[in-house]
Length: 166
Image (spheres, rainbow, N blue to C red):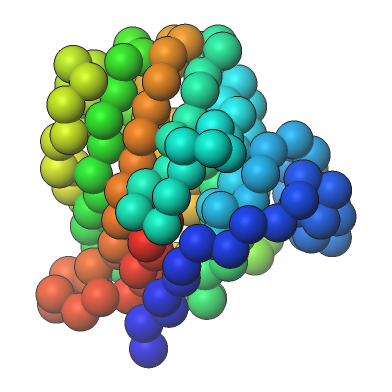
């Protein structure tokens, strides 16, 4: 079963209430985009976020794009694919969570990011070997403008497990 998501704008208060109902202690700021929410030092740029992409403004060293709206998926090995355009700096990271375990460095992988303000396709192979219930993309480690397009998770057999468009 593939989960597909599209842009749904929720006021920040509704997003915060939704996130507070989940047991991970995520930040309460940000505008929900589909099931993705800006956290850490990232803020969603509402007037530049469209059905085609999400625009984030990072004000520091830990911009995050988080979704907890992933059906419980057993993932041994998978590839996270997405498009990214960045004027920030630093490496990127992909995190995953389970129903029992929150975001942590042990459940993450680093990827190199090109911060040249051009669109680039990224593929990050992950091997959680457990049931995944959410993802977090940290697209940079510095301030700047970041845009993200379609995010897809594909299993080792090529089957699409999760797909999100903005």
